[in-house]
Structures are given as structure tokens and as C-alpha cells.
Amino acid sequence: MQTEEMRRFEELDAAFPDYHAEMIDGEVYLSTVVTSAHGQMVIAIAAQLSAQWCVMTEVDTVYDGWHGKTLLRPDVSVADPSYRGTQLKQFPADEVVLTVEVVSESNPENDTDKKVKKYAQAGIPYYLIVNPVEGKCLLYSLPEGEHYRASLETDFGKPVPIGEPFALALDTTALYTY
Image (cartoon, rainbow, N blue to C red; front, side, top):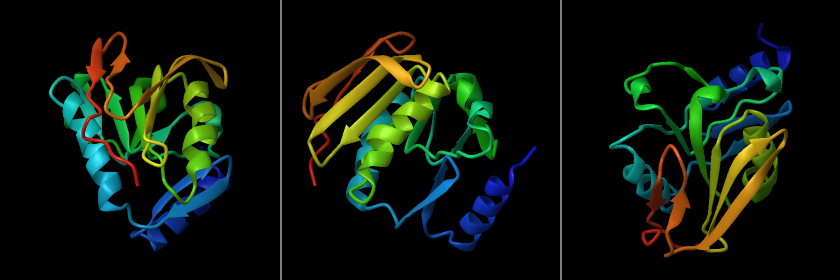
């Protein structure tokens, strides 16, 4: 069943298609068009995963435990390769194995605080924060409740190791600060 908050969010989102909109706990956040620097970093990460995984950008991520008050659109969502070619308008969070957010300058706390709790709550195994303001990546893993039990911070230019089922290290040499 769709909540009143979600209905209003969808109306607002449709009215402003040039903005990036998300809703966290019933509160709507609008961001202006993503910068090319932001987009280049999204591509740099997504390109390393797309050969072996279903990699999606800006897909609506939903989770029943958010009770219709949160709808997130990660910069990158990664799922099993069997989902390639999917045309789902909303993608279930429990099928996502990795989310990636490139920190925005306008609302960094959304990516570094609020979304950490939401992605952990949804049980998403890995959440990678790419922070071009600080020149660092922060990988969260082992979700439990509203928290992740493990995290690993690396500087841009150093690899970010991601465990099973990925068993790879993301190359961050193409990332840069702004």
C-alpha cells in the first residue's frame, strides 16, 4: 500500500524532473543537476563492476521496513547479474549487494549519516561512500540493525578491497577531490 508521503513525493518528483529527489523518513531532499565531476566518479566505479554484475544508476531503491517513508536513489546500485536488462521502476533493497554514493557538497550528511542507517537497516551487504571533499572512500560491511559492524577507510589512489561475493579491489586512481 502506498503511503500519503510516497504519493506526495512522486507528485513532487514528477513536477521537477531536472532535480534529483530522494525521501528519507518522510523528508524530501532535492539536489540540482549532478556535476560532471560527480558523474565521472560514478562512471569510474560503475565501469569496474559492470562486466560481472548488474550495475544500475539512479534506480529507486525500496525496502518494506522503511514503511513507505524513504525512497533512495543511490548513485550506483549493484545486484546479481541475473537482473541485467531489468525494467523495474523500483528495485527491492534486499536484492542489492552494494550501493555507492558520491558525496554531494550540498547535503553530505545524507550520504555519510542518514543513508548509512537506511542501507544497513535494509540489509545491503556493502555501502561505499566516495567522498571527493575529503579525498577518501569509506566502505561499510556486515549490516546489523541500523548500523554496519565493519568499515574500512582508504585514501583516493589506494584500492578499496570488497569481500565476497565480489572478491575484488576497486581502483580509485581516477577519483579526485573538489
